[in-house]
Image (cartoon, rainbow over all chains, first blue to last red; front, side):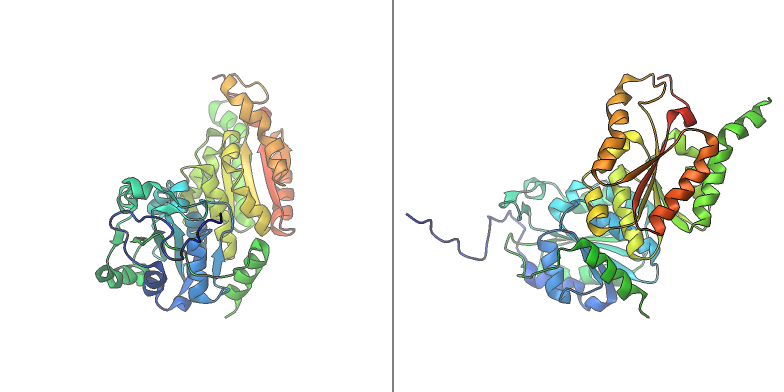
Length: 207
Length: 177
């Protein structure tokens, strides 16, 4: 007997407090995407940003090397203080190298912002619960690391303030957006890491 | 030899090495602290023209250097051989993205090592780096450091390769603990 088809939409049971739709909150938090250079995580966050930018040359997305996103963002932000760098990643990718928040807080580049799209799950691997569904608070970890400008975006009323923080550029900022565990935006992205490196660098060198 | 002259003879190559890295445009120095790199680390902290980035684990440095390259800057990762093991999956980023990558590795667990805990990773350092397509060059004597790192700089920033310079315990001295 064939298994019933899983209805698109909610891929896993949401933990309390994870109510926002990522397809709405991520574009709202980013705003005008041309104002940023982006580094993204591997799965949902890469698709979210890809859908917003149309696979722009100002985006570098991971397809592996999980745990790299925040530190790529730091290296890029230090190299280009004239540009605002926005790291968009997920809770699992961030947790894999959570110590990076300490390294980043100490440097505190004014032009680096981190947006964690926290759905409380490992979506790519079968929607297992992540630590944030089980009590871990990423904003508190960022505060503990020493990042001064942090927010949790859990309701629609929080979005405007979160968006302002991400683009203010007065010091490294960290925003965690709690979203429902739904499939990310459908987006076919380029997985050639070397091509994307060349494309990113070439676009940045153009006046 | 008086103490000051002796100290300079032992560490002079480290100052020359810092100057060499700076003359080659390196502006991001990242590290997990290690005695073998202490002069490079201190020089980078004191240098207002560079970013000196303390890491919590070495793999952060691999990602940082890729980010620096995306922005058109050059970085170097300073670590001990034990830290190489922390970097292996992150080197997927370097290999897949064909990022130029330079690391200076101070060795433990080789010539004259007195701490048995250092041997597993010390002896595995070169094989695991090579398994991830990082080319390894070794410096055994003070007079070799500048030519070897100069060669590495050319391979990394002209040819876009990933290169580790292994600063051996023959060069930096074995620890008796």
